[in-house]
Length: 240
Image (cartoon, rainbow, N blue to C red; front, top):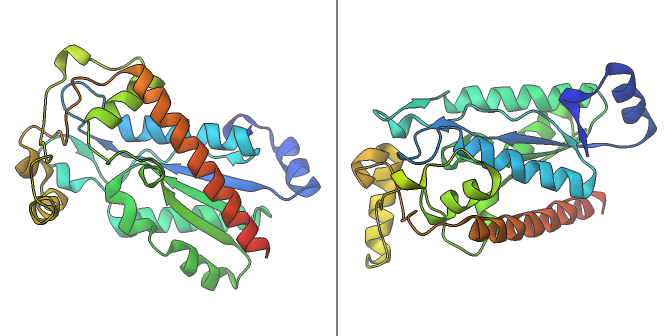
């Protein structure tokens, strides 16, 4: 892995000239995650996932974009940018990478609200660049067996595995959907997309109280394994 922010210009230019490079752009958010997790949770998790993916496959790792689309968490704390803004920033970054002769980019997403911004961004960039760049966007929770939550068991376990900034004494149950029908879950999911506090009351989707570091390490390893395989598959498909 080469972490771009720590490199020097001559070294990077030589590296890019010597062999084809693949870049990773992690995208997170700054938003509430209940009383027990920091507002940097999404960014912290995707930063660690991206670092491990990059180390495993020798990718170029860019600094994490810490701001995402989190307006749905208001009036709870969030620092948000609009969907077109995030899309524009990612587009500019990918085109800038292309100018530096980096023609393959993985955008690794750590926040649900960012999905509309990254949807079909690879197709758009192919058109803009006249097929000179290949961009693939992937959200980490699609690569684990457990259901995605927000500040619940999964995210809290992952944070225990990657950070010391967790206050388990403050952890409390949030919205529990175990006894809900698929229709009810879908309905409340639509409400959460508009107002997360209205849907969950306390800003938590799931139950974090039994989360452990060991569970987090296990889930993180599963995500890295499956996501790494997906990245390699995407590269093979692109070459073929």
